[in-house]
Image (cartoon, rainbow, N blue to C red; front, side, top):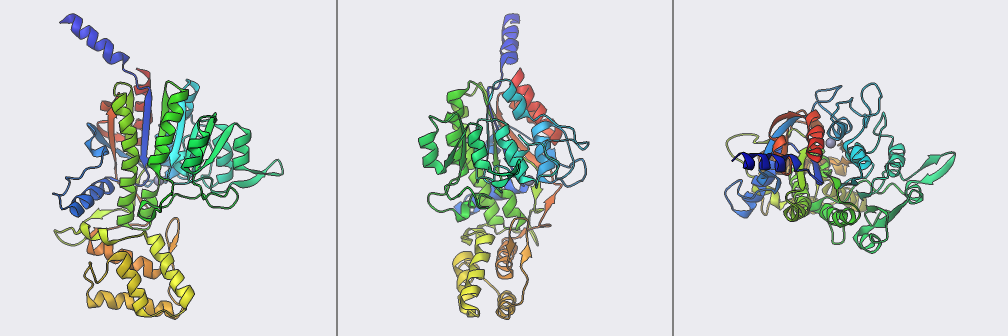
Length: 461
Ligand SMILES: [Zn+2]
């Protein structure tokens, strides 16, 4: 008996995570997960909650508070810094504390210990969340500086939409951030095929979408899952590329994988698109989970969010939810808005029938989603004002949306009984899910300062 206990204790003490997957759903509050699951269940005709994301089946779960040093509501830079370092900082700051001192990130520390490091996202690789793991700047908006620090980090693998602003000045010379990365030993791959062709030879790899043309501001984000076309790069493919790349070169690796556009969709108060992004991250997580199944005693998968976005409410009037209505939305608010803009550009004064057709095809209005006379009148009033050249676009965080696009999405959300309190972030608690070595540590109520240290502990035992 004593021997058994000693043996067990020894084994437990020796359990060390050699492979860490750190998933961050940007803007992914509890309701984004729950709503996404109930939505898919409703569409499948299953009891609500029957269709689960992979993360919510993980054996350990908890919650985290997300406030920053400077505010009750954090931005992605302060939250990312905290998730990467365990220290809170002021909104807008990356990798420094509120006094400006450099904070070492978990990725930097593990790299020093000989781990392979991968950083990947659905947005730009120099956006706040990925940057929080390698950059140290007082303002997240200094994208060129952040981009320089990316290749300076010498992390092994980056994947995502490219650089925000690849072109800038250094030593009075323009240095393109892609060229700089190449000078520093990185191979650039545009799209999955190139990555597959180049990854054997590459010492370090940056995988960006094939449409990124390396000079123009183009690499802001991958397309939303709901808008994706064949051949578009997606997060699951990036993870699929990163795992063998790191595994071949290292016996231990750390990967941060961000579902960055859950946040973008929630900034536009667009539930169908946000749920699409949630499930897209779930698909990427399944790739990591396959790896976990092959290495269950050495792998830790931890999932959390930097903050909630939109103040998403499941319920806006009575005791009913009609999430299944969201299935009739065929494109994001961004793309819908662009369709209306193009129609008014091309035709100046399109007919109400043409406008209705866009609503009918892309939101299912009239055919699949009942629209009352009052609701139609409200949409028609916006159409008339657009014909007169009136009507202002609504500014959302990452893209302005015209009134016809905004009103259509808002109406569908309202009819699904989904509510939104803000176009910004909220202070809602975010979920934590974990499986694998050290996963039990993440159970319960946490502050976001605790997560990075708990991951570090799991790599040390
Ligand atoms: Zn964020």
